[in-house]
Length: 268
Image (cartoon, rainbow, N blue to C red):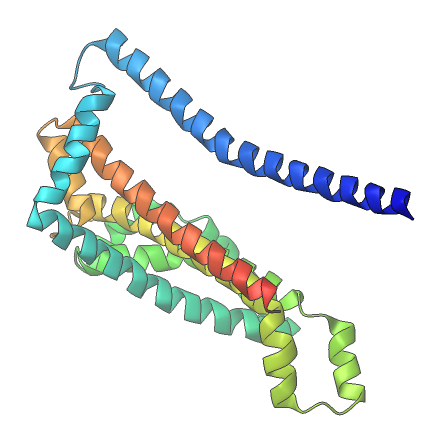
């Protein structure tokens, strides 16, 4: 009996040690990657010795924090986030309705498939330029991001709908479980984690596309306009700092939605 107890204690200690080792490794690997990028950047900047081509890490960090001293910067970031969120909301709803209809009707799914393929192949720059002829610099970035993000959202939401256990639904049908209960207790918990992850990755992608479209459209009061102005004045350090802002915003969005998805999985 004592031997069994000792064995269980050793197994528990081993599992704890393995878990701590995995957590430490997962924490260290991103730090090592980031440190390597910074070292390569510093070496390349020193070798180039031209701040207009590649500024030093220190100068870029200084420019990054200097951005937060300008009220115009907050207005630009806020406007870009609002445009990205509005465009994403429309694209998400349309993709969700389309994916649901496609799963219900095979004919509709076949009709939608070529459209999704065409949208996936759209050249973003060309579409922005065309939209600038038909609309203006405020609307064009929103439309192009909706068009580009839609195929990815549609595919992810279709996959989420496929994740509902067919056998469980059949069992609910056999036992006469009310439709409302099936929806709230079976369908929504099954699709929510994937839908949340799809929303996070889609919104992050939408934000990046929005910044690029704003640069091309010269959208006033936007992160993209800050970037294009910095390019015009050869402020390379400021350009990199603005790109870092966009990257950090995207990472924050994905991290928040990943946590929400993990919470949804726990309560499933």
